[in-house]
Image 1: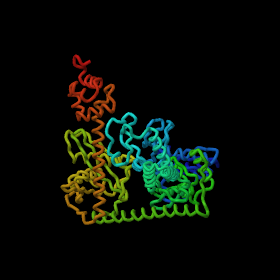
Image 2 (image 1 turned 90 degrees about the vertical axis):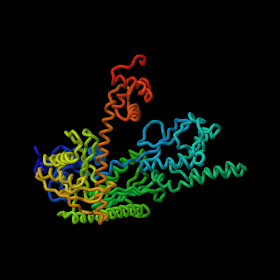
Image 3 (image 1 turned 180 degrees about the horizontal axis):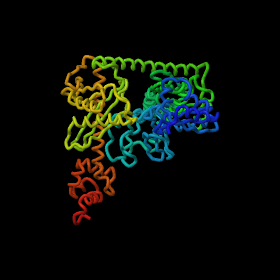
Image 4 (image 1 turned 90 degrees about the horizontal axis):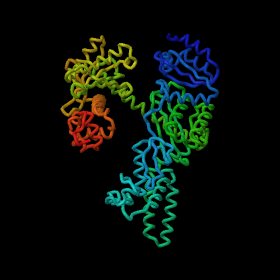
Length: 612
């Protein structure tokens, strides 16, 4: 039985005046919001009385039931709320993007010749970890730069196995590697010394390293060891040349972080990393205006940020909107996670106050810049409205494309753009069934029919209807889609996206065949081109993924044939059918004899005499 607002209010009125976490659920039982409260009764009842801001009202209107968990303290409530948000990722909670990775640099110190490698997370495996850093490509760049500065290898050779196996590679001749693969070259002890120096750089201790190298250089010069002195001089210069890169590395070892937050249509969360008072790096993320108050939003974002980052400074400076109780709870939580004391403060004056003001200014600037970009996008949509003679700017645009590879590999992709920006969580993919041969028009009809039929059946994943429907392929494809809408009793504007002979967007077409030029407006032209390319990409990638899965499936059931052997066979023969047609000797030329025997017997039931 669905609980009405009065029933929800009565249920909330029976809650205790104790700290805890409340979990809001919709009619399907899905968690849509998680919050914490000092007094559960006061907080939860507030959702079911009086008027609210539009976003709060929208969430409250969808609440069908709620659960609560009573805890002993506000700290426990904060930790539990954090855990539940991470678990459910509720639609109405403010969330940082979960695809932002913070990789580490791993050093396996147990090896005689340890190498630096990228790692997604730390582990208790005896290795040393440095970081986390800002992204995978950035982390690889740091590894390469540090290794080249200290003349450590970045090639695929392994030592001592590959010493004197081949000539030194180009890196040696260019002076970016000491040539560790040479017989009679630098020793394992010298390698370890260079690795230790790289560790100092990755630990943010570059000055300590340059001071040590400079002292050794001066001592070598006094002892008239000019060759060694010159080598050490070059090493000092190379390390000092890392100064610009060092800003990124230093950010990991920041002693103070300043948090900024600006609310708006495009809200911004900013963290500035300071080392000894100097700005080392900046992180920021834009998001929709949160349902929560500023204090709750900042608290949630700060927790999510450091949980993903896995590195904590000594001081975290937060805006004055934060509650004092939250400051203590956050400090306790971060200190526990970091294994040392972490202070969370709201500075009122002095240098730290200036750092916090700078973070706030950065958040405000990014938010305003994003708002300006959003205004430009709205202007583009207004131009599109006038061009297509629509009743209003198309807030939600959906686009369809077909991709096929024979009658069994036909797929369709639907992309969604809201306010001119892709909304990937609403993308949908369709496998086209029941066709004996490729038929783009019938495929388009089937995809569009399934999408809008699901909406009429009440499927919440499809209930949001578009203001504009774009169909890849021109007038005939658009007419096929419009026919489906008419049969379903829907009236939506439909246009075909037309490409030129170079497969680039040229114009839009009505279902009746009237061409509408868009090249005269660069902003509209760019938007339609982006939508068309994105939809085509999604359709192609889906079709390829299905084809790849089909190729693999024919070899999946063969005992002893894993991913590596499947890849080798498909690379050599191209298709499962060709693998099946190959004789035993042909298979042996690609994989070991025991694997070849397993493949041959799987398809033919026996191995030729003398081959067992």
